[in-house]
Length: 125
Image 1 (cartoon, rainbow, N blue to C red):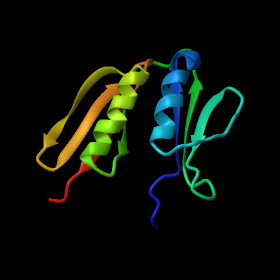
Image 2: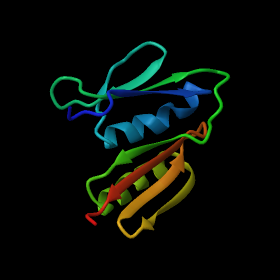
Image 3: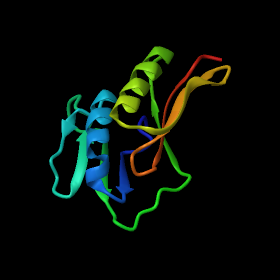
Image 4: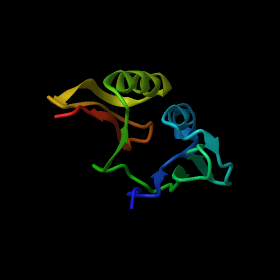
């Protein structure tokens, strides 16, 4: 069982508000195939058949909470690169990038609707 989950369906209060943000961030994270689904912003991993995807849809009454979605980066420099893309795309409440622990390097931020996200790399211990 190599895969641990299949996809993320994220709710936002305004799809229009987050669309430019996710259109910049998700392809940089490897979700490069735009699925073009009505009322959704959905990007799929494009290496062969779809193995995972990240979808965003509007739920007007949605309120961001304390949940966080963390994306893996292959190296600390990749955390830096992806973090810069997130910031340029409009990330809010940015913290880092920095070592949260000796073997954990990450940047924390929110999308334009306040959903908490992270890009991290765990160093060998």
